[in-house]
Image (cartoon, rainbow, N blue to C red):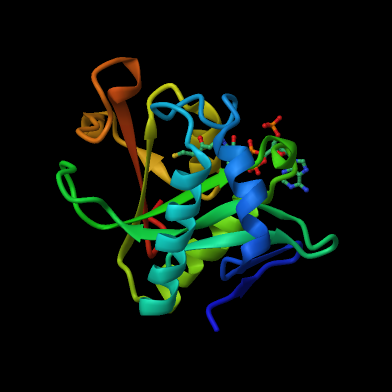
Length: 180
Ligand SMILES: CC(C)(COP(=O)(O)OP(=O)(O)OC[C@H]1O[C@@H](n2cnc3c(N)ncnc32)[C@H](O)[C@@H]1OP(=O)(O)O)[C@@H](O)C(=O)NCCC(=O)NCCS
């Protein structure tokens, strides 16, 4: 079974019971502020099914995120190959949490676990992360786990419709800390 554990969290497979809260957070304008639009219940369910299919097929991907102390589902964190059509290739880390779960350090804790998995279990030389240039909260997670941004890597995300959300940033973390 594909599962990662941290002090406070478990990154696990998706369950039927996740679908309600997952759809709820994808219909929350605050959670979707830096994405092009809200998701319908059907779109949310389809995405959870895709995420689970990836976990079944290769044993890693966008894991469902649960708070160990309460059993509460709070979103996802994981790793995925960068989508085709982007101006770079590699494996990216990503996270999306329900609004009520922000401000506890959960995204950073889960991100550290998936990055360690990428280096130690997948043997990656580098993990990437991508977000809208305006999404400073997500970039703060990237910085907290030691990722760095070269402004020369900034790009227009071809998967995002024309508009201010298209401007995107790329963060990188190498498997070994850079020499100081
Ligand atoms: C991006 C996102 C996951 C960041 O969530 P977050 O809660 O800000 O990030 P963390 O989980 O790392 O929590 C950090 C905050 O928790 C606080 N915190 C509280 N207890 C903590 C603890 N025990 N350990 C660490 N941090 C703690 C930190 O001080 C920090 O607070 P601050 O934001 O006021 O500085 C969240 O905003 C989100 O889901 N956004 C919508 C989806 C999205 O944009 N995803 C990224 C797309 S690429």
